[in-house]
Image 1 (spheres, rainbow, N blue to C red):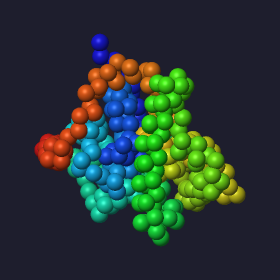
Image 2 (cartoon, rainbow, N blue to C red):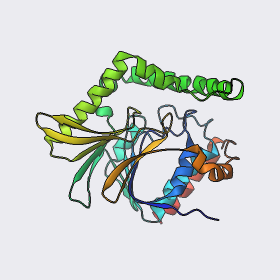
Image 3 (cartoon, rainbow, N blue to C red):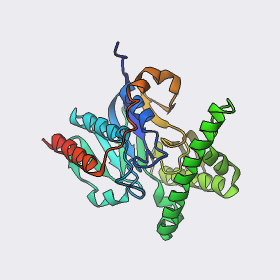
Length: 285
């Protein structure tokens, strides 16, 4: 029996990092299949072009692309906000293709008259602005840490019979400079949003899902971050005039997960690009 899809006015997804070992594409696909959005905001780093390798692109990663294109083909308004890992798409800023629009930022007018300012957030990253090679090196190290984390969790669950642990989250939470960076990122986003009279500021980039009110001497704003699909498996949803932070629960998707058990077989390079070209041609018709 087909499960009924949840209607969602707006869904915001960021930092999927398709094309990397850390991406939880199967889980994301299960989530996408469970909702019926009216507006989709892909808030950067959906495809990790920095680390993109033609030798690694599982079917599950391709299926996420295909499902998003299916939404676009149905006329669901979709904003692709560029991030730092897919920054080469910034040259196409303003491009419209069906119901898809590529942007660097977007302001959405909500039904209650409030405004939500959305952007990826790497503009505030000093490392990105001045030392891109260092940022790329850090991205490779992060992906390696995710691989180590997966091996650790396999050992923990299968051998020690204990739960999972996110090593990268533990490291970020224990390093004072990382905590300070997150706080500064959130504060800076909020201050600019307040200065521009927005009601909400919505970011990605730092892989730290959050909804909270930030108050300064100039006013207040609700800061939100959609998190990621590497560690937190999270998204933002707007329905019935309210924003909520969604977190993936594996237990809710057992049946759908089993449908994708054959997704680990990789496409070769020619299959990948032929399929992507085919999907985009269909969307343009």
